Image 1 (spheres, rainbow, N blue to C red):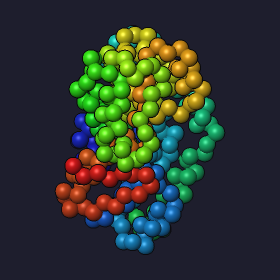
Image 2: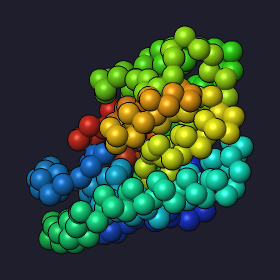
Image 3: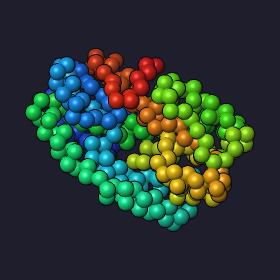
Image 4: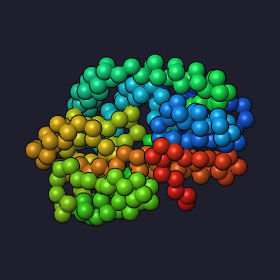
Length: 269
């Protein structure tokens, strides 16, 4: 965890990441985007010391890091009050969705199984997403403002993790033939910004917004109908893997064996 924090430039463990069962000696790690009970069973039977998830075990904890959307919007030129309003709208959408789930029960069950099997258990979400956000933004900065939307889509699609994930890079709204203009990657804020964040950016000088996913078809339809700018989706699991792989590279250089599962795309650089 400390290594991930240092790589991302963070001073403390964010709310959507955590060590659920400590492990004193780590030689073999089973790493997955998500982790379920059967993964712990596999880890026990194959001599792993630690099971490491990317996504939060209690996925509603992403709500506690969503204020990063506000920071990103203000840095991109959105007035503070408008940024706060957009965050409130986006948070309301996700809180309603979270109310339909009972995530805490699942965390308790996983922790009990890890205890029974004598396995370390943790997840690292925001630090790795921040590493991925930086990579995606660097790719955009190399082409913007004069490069085209289609050129950036091609650039993202050629990244090994995104290519191997097979999800494809898509354009929600806007035109592939237009110039990128001012381009901002919104990632590493728990979840995507949905319509409220993208719309606020479009209305305040940002021409192209990049998300890794957009869960709401209704919000996507609204963005397409209004068509105020270009919204690119890079793909969920490939983009997550993009930010996790730098950490895995470092772990392997330290002599730790890492085995990947559950949609994690391993690429060595």
